[in-house]
Structures are given as structure tokens and as C-alpha cells.
Image (cartoon, rainbow, N blue to C red; front, side, top):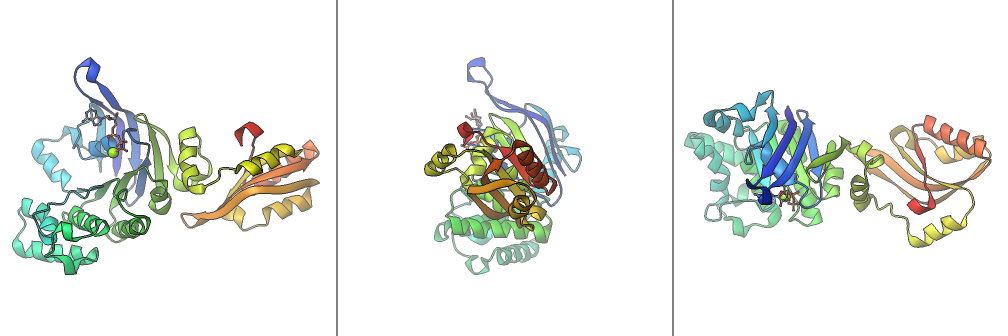
Length: 342
Ligand SMILES: Nc1ncnc2c1ncn2[C@@H]1O[C@H](COP(=O)(O)OP(=O)(O)OP(=O)(O)O)[C@@H](O)[C@H]1O
Ligand SMILES: [Mg+2]
């Protein structure tokens, strides 16, 4: 559906002012997927999303939507294609002198649609986002969450295949964020719209995305399904993002306790099927090892139970090796944690 192939973006012309914001981005988003890109400030997120609808033209590489390379299109053809790409922004970008109705109608007016069609479409969209009673209000009469709903309605006016969201919830409080994310999920489910969202908030990724890519310094350092990336982050930056919501930092007093103990310490991560079985007690029954849980939590990701425990194991080293294999055979991820890495 959406494919970015080795996309580079360099800002500035002369040497001193050159900024290489994207350094060879490869990304593939399937139809109906909600794909999140997360990264710190300055990582290149906005540049990346703006390269998808050519608000920024990539310096090199390809942007393919349903197999069509946007960079090869004429101005007129690009205008047609852009109708299939909606976008919402952190600051909503509504026209303050226009009513809510007029804001949502704008893309249809620009597209030369008949009046009656516009009236019906805008009414339907405002009802979809729950603001049909606010049609004649102006943006400043709405809350942030309501303004973003108007932004979503406007983005859907031209029946897009893709919706791009640039930090769409970053200006909202947690409960409003949740309701806007629910609405975006409804957009995907009811209109089969593919959603590409960039954010610096890991809770947004956890709550709504199917897949996630982590961007750092204009490079995608890691990508995969949300459950895989959250359970087995491979890079330091991903681990730090995951930590912001899984809260698996070991408290100081527990670190001291672990250091004072003999035996080895392991992080045991289990998801899906392995959460249904009494993994630790089965292990303790089958092998001569003492298991001591120091820290951890069990929660849910994408509707799948997910556990992350810090466990001390004491016993004969061969027995420990077999116990670890036993847990791995039951789909748990078991990794030794050195005291320095706690
Ligand atoms: N128009 C521009 N001209 C020159 N440099 C730019 C321009 N826009 C962005 N940059 C630079 O490109 C890099 C990536 O910026 P970008 O806005 O894509 O980051 P971001 O991940 O969206 O950050 P934030 O989370 O703060 O919005 C930064 O170093 C930035 O200074
Ligand atoms: Mg940005």
C-alpha cells in the first residue's frame, strides 16, 4: 500500500547549512494497518511524514502508494493522488475565520464538488466524529480534542486511502488522547483507512498501532510488530522508549537486594500462550532450582497478556541451563542480567 524506498532528505543547499534529516528510510505499510513511527525531537519524524505526501520532496528515493511512484507524477497527477492522502496535525491547522462546517467542507469546495454533495458529506463526517451539533461554531469555541475531531473529519472529506498523523495527540491530555485514538481506530475499522502516525509518545504506539518503527538521527533503527518490539527491544533507544511505559526500571533497593544474593539473575518475558501456564511453578517442580521473583509486572499489549519478571535462580548450573530451556520451550524469553545491567 505505502512503500518508502531508500528515502533521503537533505535540507539546505550550501555546505554549512546542509542538514541530512533522512538517511535512507525503508518502510512498508500494509492496507488497513496502523503504523507508528516513534522518535525523539529532531529525529526526522515530521520530515518523514511530510515526504509521504510530498509536502517535502525527498532528495532521493521512492515514495510508492499502491505501486504509483509519487515522485514521477506531474503536478496535476500529484494533486489527484493527494486527495487520497489525508493529514492531521498537532496544532489542528483549522481556519479560524471559518465555521466547523466550512473547515470540513474546504477540501470538497477546492475539489469543485456540488453544494448538495458537500452538505451531505460534511454532515455525515461531523456526525461520525460526534460534532454534528457544532457545525456553525468557530474553532476557538471548541476544546483541543474537539478541534482534532474536526481535523479528522476534514482529512476524511476526500475519502482518503491513507491518513497521516503528525503528533496528532501530543497537545491533548491523557483522557482526550484516548478518545481521539479510539476515533482513529474507528476510522481504520469503518473506512479501511491505512494510518501512518508519528509520535514521541510510546503510549500512543502501545494503544493503537499494529506495527512500530523507531527513528533516530534520520535512520530507522528498529521496526516490527508492537508486541515483538515491546517484548524484545533490540536497541538502546527502543529500550528507553519501551521503559517510558512499561515501567520496568528496577528500583534501587531491589537492585541492592539482587546484588547481595547468590545465584544468577534473569529477565523472563512471556507473552500470549506462555502466560496461560504456571511457568515458574512448573519450572520449580521439574528442576532443582530455587526461583525468587524480585521485580516485575504482568500487563496487556494489543489485547495479548504480557509479563516481564526479574527472577533470581539458584542451583546447579546444569540444572539452571535445563530449567531455562524448559521455559524457552514454552515460548518465554529468558536472558541473564548482569548486575551492571540492572
Ligand atoms: N525546513 C528545514 N530546514 C532545515 N532543516 C530542517 C528543516 N526542517 C527540519 N529540519 C531539520 O531536520 C531534522 C529533523 O527535523 P524534524 O522536524 O523532521 O524532526 P522531528 O522528529 O519531527 O522533531 P520534533 O519531535 O521536535 O517535531 C532536524 O535536525 C531539523 O532541524
Ligand atoms: Mg515533528
